[in-house]
Length: 266
Ligand SMILES: NC(=O)c1ccc[n+]([C@@H]2O[C@H](COP(=O)([O-])OP(=O)(O)OC[C@H]3O[C@@H](n4cnc5c(N)ncnc54)[C@H](OP(=O)(O)O)[C@@H]3O)[C@@H](O)[C@H]2O)c1
Image 1: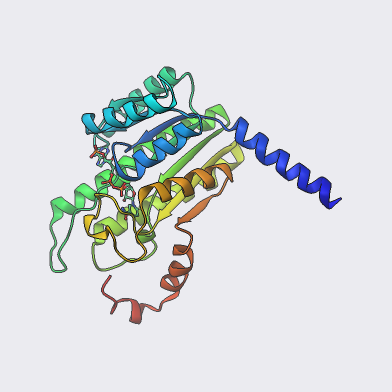
Image 2: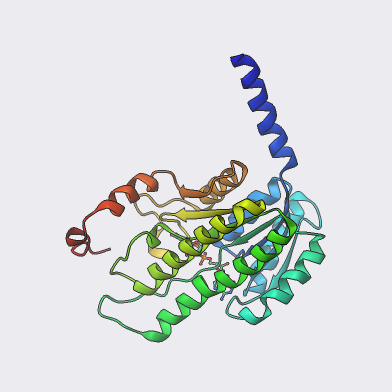
């Protein structure tokens, strides 16, 4: 009996891996986590369209992928997520280019450094517009398409930084809190329509987003995050902390009483 179950689990996993749906758009794939994820998914046979503003970087990521995994594995489009009005038309254009869509992954994000005594509205609004409104435009539009299709996977890169209102950078943390909630709401709306939503919460990652993190305690390279995201996609997870230990760190942070939390400088 146990043997039969083990064989079934192995079969289920293997077939799941082979049959995984693989037409994928990644928004924010010119560097960092997005480009590492593009390379990981290309290795797994995904057909990709990559978006971001930096054309030279996108070209370099696509050339790497196409040289390694075959011509036509990855294409790119230059796009600024601030241009929310163009998202619907662009999404449907890319869907016909790919011949359909299985996965929409929103990675784009910025973190403008903010001093502890600084209240610079332009900096704050830019983070909210790119990280939250840009995310809502892509994720919401893809959600509508996937609902009609009756299947699809949305992956949104949020952050452990969105779990509480920390003092260091109010707009960045709020953009991530908003994105986390938006993803959860869509998950709860769409599950009964066959559409899955995965929320990714990375901890410290060595990318250009926060250059000071490179070599810091608990910081990991973007390739580690990409590996965890790919595994979470395969295992049909709803939320993934990456690396795994952040789930337990955040459990403590989440339950710290407010009178302690407001005295901690993070
Ligand atoms: N690094 C960390 O420690 C960390 C931790 C938790 C969560 N995250 C999240 O992970 C995501 C990726 O960050 P990363 O660390 O990989 O940073 P990164 O190396 O700076 O990459 C950011 C990506 O977002 C794109 N992007 C930024 N503004 C955009 C815009 N207006 N339109 C389109 N694309 C835009 C960038 O492309 P272009 O500049 O070419 O447009 C780039 O591809 C972000 O959402 C970030 O908040 C990072």
